[in-house]
Length: 68
Image (spheres, helix red, strand yellow):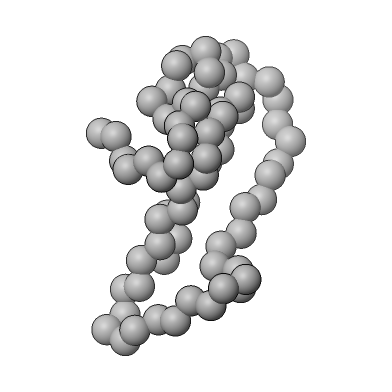
């Protein structure tokens, strides 16, 4: 399972992908093979962007754990 989280307009930082194996069997992940897909859609300009709201993940560096 890959966590589904939208990228918000004007967000800047490094993407942290959270994955989970929900089966009782081990899963192998091989180098240079895909594990997830990111799809970008063009949308309208938001009234307030993620940068305007000073989102808690704006400008993160490296792996960032969830901030509740």
